[in-house]
Amino acid sequence: MSTERNDIDTVYQFQPVTDPKVDRLAHLEHGRIWVSDPASFNDPFDLRLYIRDLTCRGPYADEERLRQALACLLRDNAQVRDFWLFDDALLAVLQDWMQGKVGSRDVIAAVQQRFNSFGVACFTQDWQSPLMWSHYADQHEGFCIEYRVCKDELARDDRHMFLQQHVQYVSALPEICLSEVLFSPHQVLNRLLSTKSIEWAYEKEWRLISFARSHASVELPAGMQISALIGGIRMHDENLQALIETARRLDVPAYKVEADAHYAMVLKPLPEAAPRNG
Image (tube, rainbow, N blue to C red; front, side, top):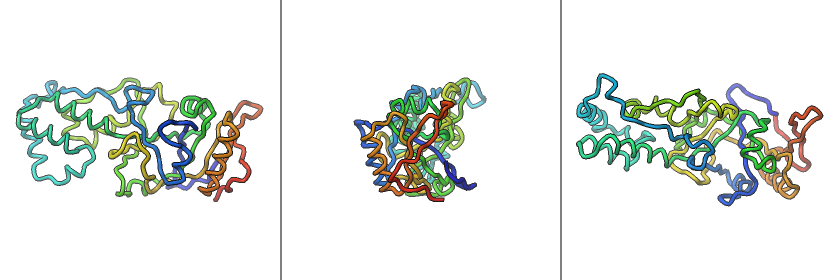
């Protein structure tokens, strides 16, 4: 569909037309993107991997020493508050744990509560996936948004608290130890945020994780730009017209999916929409 540069990726987000939470077309014109609450996802384990205290299996089973070690790492460390995992609530529980007032189960609960506050925007690298159209775009009555993404520019955007991740698909979901979360969060949390069962591999998912908002419309980060709108095969005429008008205001092309003689999905340019640049 588009001419690719080495530093630019193209991703797609499938949308229903009718949604009680937000007018999915209208909010695009305001430079916004919807980040969902993972609790509503089809996969009940998404961002919900189990965390256990398994330190007894290793050479550091002395919990008091672990408390002392974490206290040493956190003491007078301003970078901790700048790291997205640690909010005030989690830091308060960690302080209690380091003083022996609460146990590891309380720390695990606080970590999981922090994860429950994150929002996620999900994308795919394949607009032609029949399952994606069926599952996420009202069985082709909805639409698809094409985004051009400069991941380097997105990573440099310090106005927002976003992490970008390619989802990793595994045959068995990993077991996470609390010690990993506390002492190497920059490594282990990628697994917690972006690991799914192999059954979901058809999604070819790339995602944005918001540490600040969930279940909300947020400002589109730098490095992301809408480059086309695509209506589904069964999109109703009035919704298709609304998609054309939105595309015109965004100055991007609009397409409708059609099936060719071999049942493959192809794109038909819609009239009165903006032409594709480049």
